[in-house]
Image (tube, rainbow, N blue to C red; front, side, top):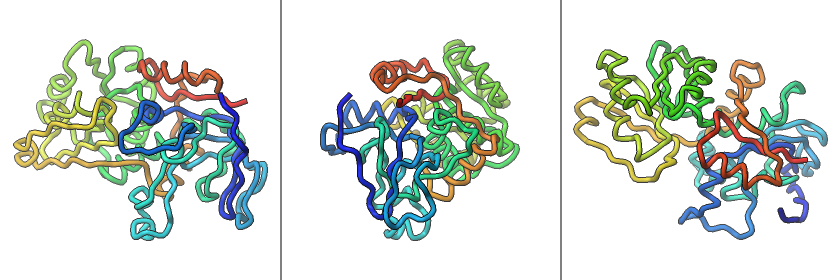
Length: 327
């Protein structure tokens, strides 16, 4: 660890004393180096965080020192054509904590006041930190982009990922039948406890073939594929006619193989999705605060063991979110 000067809030900012920061695969990608991302080193990782307000800027009126808050990791300009119409994550200057800006693996972080949302007193900092990026991404991709409807079949690949544990719950809340895949029966049973209906162990049987047969050779309505090249070709083949595959990430690489014959003959839709706007963030976090959606915390590491936490996440052993506790 390294010491940095304490951040000073700008007029419309707050400084948050971080108590918990959750890991995302984005942290691993930034650490390993994203070719198009130019950073000033050393750089502080971490997109998700929760803590209390340590200081406020001169123009901030709705937050006070001591308030318990969780952070929206997406920072938008508020002025461009996309921000004006409420599409924050398409902002021409969109930035994410820990990727483009100093992040939450620190005792303090400065953010715009609108990005700090008060949390209930009965919600732990660890659970709060585990929620934002996963749930806001899941909400936008399923509700905003794929527009899931009650009665639809939704397939979520890689049940143990933090995003997947959020997506299972969002799809179930929307009234869908939820299919999940995983490499272990233990993770599948945990997914079932979250609401998954149909479980497929891809180590035991090819998941695409299994889902095709389980749906009577119809296919599913929606697939959440955050894996990328390793699964995308099979995802497209497993959709019903008129189905949608939504891509919120690509952990196995960036180049996807798409057979155009499936695309036009089955009239499929391929949807990209990332993060969420402020309204979607507040909508989904309200459901978290109400207990209708529950962050899944797999393990908590102390901040000094961030390297071990990264290695654990990189091995894919987790079910849910890995969190750093910051004393």
